[in-house]
Length: 84
Image (cartoon, rainbow, N blue to C red; front, side):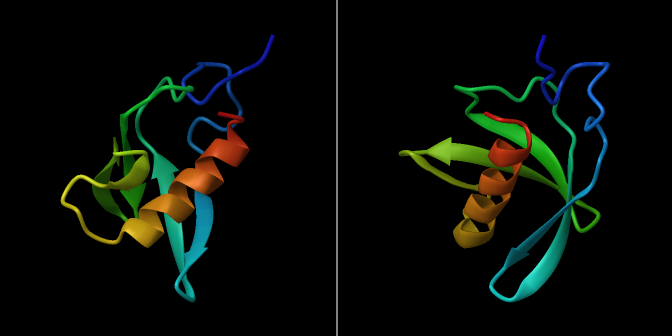
């Protein structure tokens, strides 16, 4: 049985991830549970600040519309880690 980011037994449930975008390192912690294919929105902790990533028109971005390159890098890292 596969585990996902939202499973209680998932060893990665609260593991911080490091993402590099635009030459800067960021620490990301997934706050939302149940990360799976088809998800359109989820919450993360980005460098200690709560942020929401949303899928708009096929591209990942932040809910406030800023730093879409960073949001795409975060999604790529999370989707590889959790096999989404």
